[in-house]
Image (cartoon, rainbow, N blue to C red; front, side):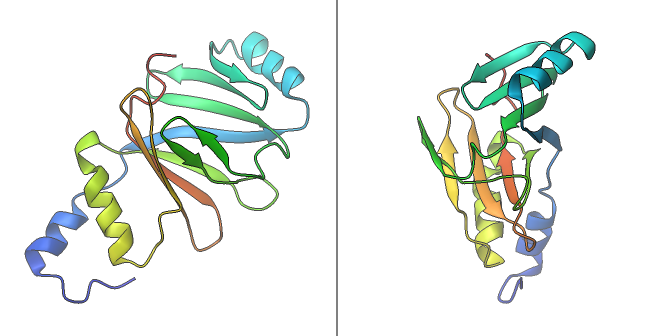
Length: 152
């Protein structure tokens, strides 16, 4: 991860971009129904989205708790706008950090400049974007624009 050949002004500009918040916290659960019932009834979290392999609970307008059925995310999944890379709590976790809409290209460039391959870019139907890549420990890191779950 080097910034060789980068001017001081370019480096200062690149340093100004940073994630704004944790957008998603992901938990892997063996019993999706039991975990969902706990977070809905005991924790009083509203359900924002669900499908066969996951449930999404809204904490705030820009903070979400995702429950994935253990084992159901070991293969990439195609979604409208791109592909979500494989992830699973047994072999690396998944964290989504919120970035501003106007910083997506700067983040893509920063990752490239640091020789970090972008595994996937998803352009969601909402108009939001997610960049997926791995940290040195193999965790799946997602940089996502903040309104990803807004209309769900």
